[in-house]
Length: 325
Image 1 (cartoon, helix red, strand yellow):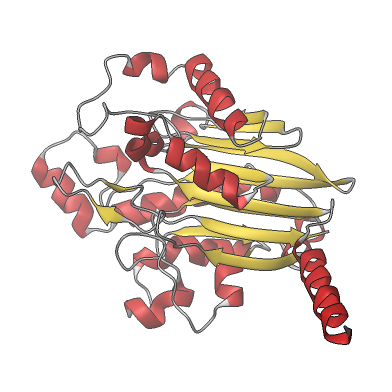
Image 2 (cartoon, one colour; image 1 turned 135 degrees about the horizontal axis):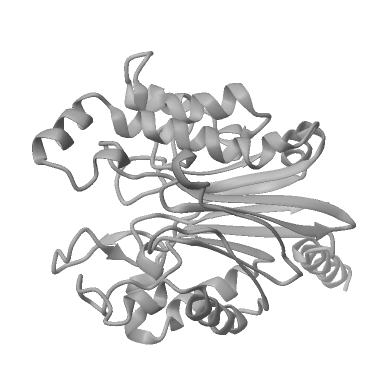
């Protein structure tokens, strides 16, 4: 009888520990590759099922727009309509509702690769960042939104930087010009400018961001010096510039590195960590769990027919972060 009571109490304790308080916040970030290209064949059922199982409070989806016809690299016939905010928002309102989110924020986007925030609580849009004419170096776009947790404002910055080894300024030019740009690491220099621009129009607008709750996440398309024990680039390699800027000029902390400083975690189908979640210390102190998540569904698998460079379900892995307020 005593053993039964002890076992029952132990099980109740475990159940109690697994229940999340109203002040907890679970973030799921993921570059879902071409608006979850892999999910077009099944009406996104596997995607929605996976998201539902994570029980997220906030999701940030990078590459949130469908672009190609199912199972192909052929552009959708109505691709121009997808570029319009109304169709994209309608798609995400319907899809997010399936996993319990009714609040949507669409970041600024200049092409077919926007970021979308969905949440189970109101989302305040602060800025949709695409730049201002000639001064802009923003490639795909970025966004700044806020949510409220336990009466506190939490800033969410989303981004997706320029992906190429050559500069965006030479896109569409001759092969010779593009190769010369690659050789000069102009793609890395461009990304560094883009990162500075996004920070200057988000976290650096605050007088005391280190005392506030800020998170910034996305596909940075760049490597960090903290992982250079894996990459072994030269000390002054331009491929490290983006994260050098963040770590030297902002109060952001690399959440994954902070928790796994001696354990390299790839965020792609290869061996590269190019997706990050950054938080200010005030918010980092609230983190109770963080991982680049890999399971049977999220593990990237190269498309068997070698269609473009597509993977199933994505060429990136999701990042999950739990905060306790």
